[in-house]
Structure formats: C-alpha cells, structure tokens
Length: 224
Image 1 (cartoon, rainbow, N blue to C red):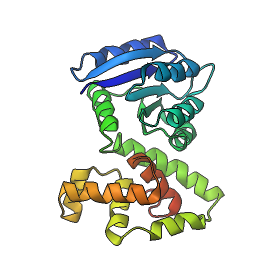
Image 2 (tube, rainbow, N blue to C red; image 1 turned 90 degrees about the horizontal axis):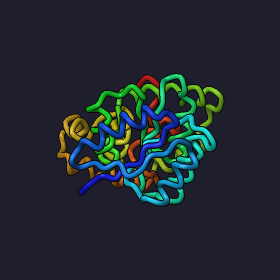
Image 3 (tube, rainbow, N blue to C red; image 1 turned 45 degrees about the horizontal axis):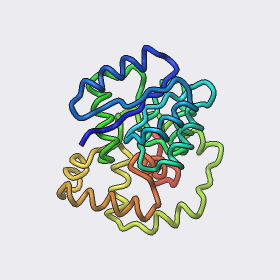
Image 4 (tube, rainbow, N blue to C red; image 1 turned 90 degrees about the vertical axis):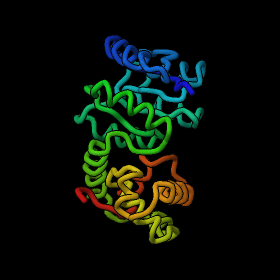
C-alpha cells in the first residue's frame, strides 16, 4: 500500500529536496506541498495523507498549532515535525500537540525514508537517540520547575503490569521491538502485545507519547 505524504515547510528547497527523495520510493507518494501552517492544515483536509512532514517554525500559522489542528481533525494522519536542536521546547510542545515524532532537517536520505515508513506503521520511535536526548533534556527542565508528579499519572502507572511497566521503560530508552524482545528474552509478538496494552491503558496515541508520559510520570529520568 502506498504511503501518502504532505510536505509542509516555508523553504521551497527543503520541500523540493524531501519531495524528490520520497517520490523516488515505490511505496511513497507526495500528494501535496504547503508553504505555511494554514496551507498544511488545508492540504491535509483536501488530500487525507497518511503522514505529514511539518516544519516547527512556519508563517501564518506555526507548526505547533498546525499539528494540534491536524491531529485533532485527522487522527489517522501521523505528523512528523522537522526541527533542529536549538528548538527543544518547540519539539516538546509539538509532541504534546499530537505529533508522532520529529526529524532534524539535515536528516540523511535513507533516514528520512525510513522515518516515514516507521511512523506510518507505528512500530517504533523516530531517531531513538535524538528522541531520548531532546525529550530527556526538555522534561528535565520542566520537571525542575514542577517536580511534583500529578497523582493521576501515578495511578495510570499502577494500572500497568510489571512486564508492561518494564516494557514502557525500555520504549522510553528508544529501543525497538526487536531490541526489547532481546532484552526481555521474549518474542517480538509478545512485545507488540505489551506495547499495545500499555498504550491502551495509558490512553496514549503512540510510542512517542509513551516516551513523554514515561518521563513526566517518573517511570524514567533524564539521562537514564
């Protein structure tokens, strides 16, 4: 099945470059491009893509608000934010807005293609090392300002079985299903079942949001 993609970035060269790379893949089709946040929202409404590549900093409507609207109106569309390390806070806000992950704008060709396929499948985190670093740093700063974990998060953690909690901690470390399976000495199918169960119990959209939850609830700490 073809993965339908919309690319939204205010830099024409970025859109063109990403578009050429993705359109060259037999299983990916770029169905529209957008130069600002409002156009991105409208493009998703018009084309119902599977994945939206969305720049954080956009004119007319910023990427965070665009992500929030797309995720609310079109939950089946996975949003990947395009960003750089100097906008960590924007990345954190984007994840809370409903984005399923993020990529650095200088991403390699193969990593871009892989990321689109991965987020479309919902099987794993995008760029695990980047995810751990950014979420860990931002959550640590926010935790420093508000160290008390809301009770509701604690109650949600208590709803998990011991193995589900262990799986959550490994997901938060950016590990893939195969890596978690090797760590726990179980099958990948079993890992997928644990991940599916914990996402349902915690009311989370996908694995990226499981990482955010794990840090916020204190299941893992920055740098762990």
